[in-house]
Image (cartoon, helix red, strand yellow):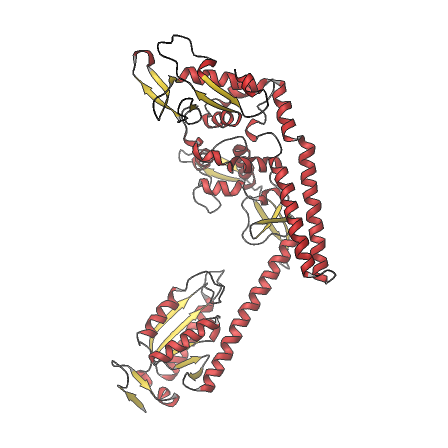
Length: 520
């Protein structure tokens, strides 16, 4: 019944199913269990499969040569997670460690037809001809068995694709209806019907919690309040690293229950969900059914600030000195940085050219002059008027947003007509392309409109007081200076005894035609 030695090594081969069933403990059975999802993390599905597979092996008196389990892992062709235990199983098969593969159903092994064919051919090549699937024994050398296994594999792939299509249809439907989907966004909570478990609403999470700092200080906070506070700070120029340090210093846990990171805060304040927008595949597709946590002006202020490419060169959050790397050398255009001087006339800290030492000045002189000049400019009534005129004012912002909303509604109507067959798919595709471009154009206009975020609340007669209230917030002051002016330091001239003043600077305001004249 059992034929030995017909393959390389000591591998046992069985002539047919009867020989395998009579083989007893000489038959080495490899078993595999898998489940796509395990949200309760209890392993119940794979545990049940393992018991059933082991029962089949025990019933036939075979030797349990190895058990391999992948829990919470998809086997479809759309899967994104690796299946480490499955790979180990394949290695054991390739090494000739088994005589029969035991699984509860084909879909537990894979839902990808190409993978099925690859494994089937590999098993045939190494001599593992027998598969026990759900208690039914198949021989890969038998054309009828191969056909039946092939049918099951095709069905498993079809079922996986059907499930995926249904899930995607539900996601798209939820997106178009403005319903939330996926992981809950920090700062919100979801309310469900106790009987049907259907989502009733998503609302700000205002539950009061307590956090304990390292020094024992207790802070009361809400998740919604943390979000609003982070937006407000970033919008007025507070660096992400400062926000991170403050949150961690107060002992407030991040959305993941650990410490906050700058990348996490950046991602948060760039998320349109917080202005009540529904995002699908990385794009805003309309309004959500939940209330906004922050106003759109604050949101777009953060977007403009964080996506400004010039910020990548200043590292404002780490800056200690007010003008380092903001002022440039008027001779070589190199950066001006703070250093310690020891010359008789330059004791204390200096700002000097890093590249060629073309120009230098006492830090206190340059800091004082620049701050006075900037505050004086912010105080001018015409400054606020000029910035409002340049931005087009609130009316232009509102118009741009309203037009974008109108175009989105028009696009939704075209989509409805296409789904009902009243317009052709080609007509819809052409219209969609044009409307999408126009929507993006108007949203960009709204995004760019408005006074620069770091200047809000700093203009007019209260500018001097507001500047003084910034105190030691060097990073915010740097952001304001960098936003409003381009400054270059010139050499004093050999033997010059002239006090520091406007003649040592090339000054250009970034706003308004009178920039250079006002600077002088």
